[in-house]
Length: 274
Figure 1 (cartoon, one colour):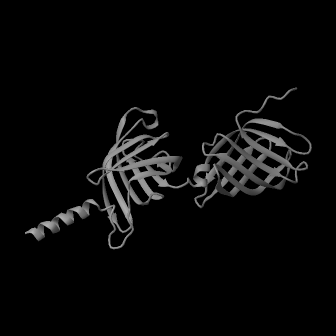
Figure 2 (cartoon, helix red, strand yellow):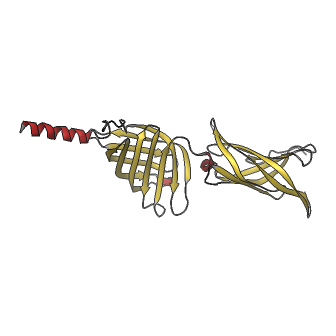
Figure 3 (spheres, helix red, strand yellow):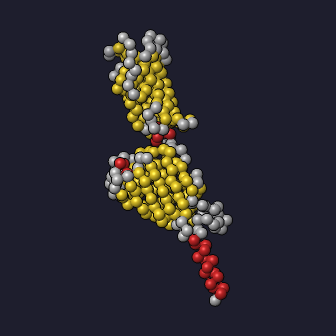
């Protein structure tokens, strides 16, 4: 009887420590910690709306379950107090349910479910599902830096500053440039201007450099007077911060007017003296 009791106790202890012990030589997975990464939000109204610089905090309860806390400036506060843990190979899985509050400025509370697959502090994927919001919303959290192409996607509005050998600081308000993720890490860039024509870069390279995101590419633009136009090669050079409120997007056309550069900047054009 004593031998059976000891074996039973060892079996229970092994289950409770599932995510902390090595299993047949597999790597230890400790799920407690602060995870830094980004979220992609999807629902019936939009897909892959990205939020960089997010943090999910997971703590281990005394019974071996997990408490999850996720506060997002965009999506509100998510709380899961009793997520169950299991392990398979080198992956620790968590699943549970809880609530989210203050979502999108609302003070209502919504039920949500939570799942996670954790390999390490720097390699984890988590999902928060909120069925009652926007026809069913899912937030997917991934550790690491936000993909440059997804973060850059959007419409950048402001004014353009045109400079060449013949003139400087020719400003035009109400201009915009649209960036679209191609799905392969690159972005499509389109600048339609009543003053300067339509600039299109089908596949601009997008990368992160320090705290900024940059994109470069080239294309051809039709420019001219009246109905007489010619095609000219141009290069694109753009940069922005993660919030996309401090940016510079420049189109350089070397063969036009001794070298024409049109730069989109945020805000409205500076006041010029007459």
